[in-house]
Image (cartoon, rainbow, N blue to C red):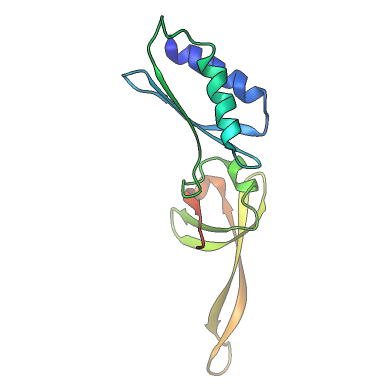
Length: 153
């Protein structure tokens, strides 16, 4: 019962701001509610508070004791939804498919796939030495096993 009530409140909170979306939602055996959200333009502390209040203010602690944690999907967290790729256009991604791994700049997000581009050094077709070439790879969402933003410090 708590699960469906919290999910209903969570959905209502997210509907109030259509730039936010759900990444993960769980309720532990000790009634620890954990919500992870992301947003098309990032997530602020105010966004987390807004979602937290949408849930907490509509549950009665007298009926059910619970703890609530609302967090944003961290910068080091894997990308799990196609919607998350759009906000990362222009950033460097590390993408693992079933058959290969790629690291490149995300240049486009289409309905069925993403496009990564990067420069690589390859042997010259004729003669000695290497030449820098521009590489491009389209990767279907269905082929992606794991993807994350490469952070630079």
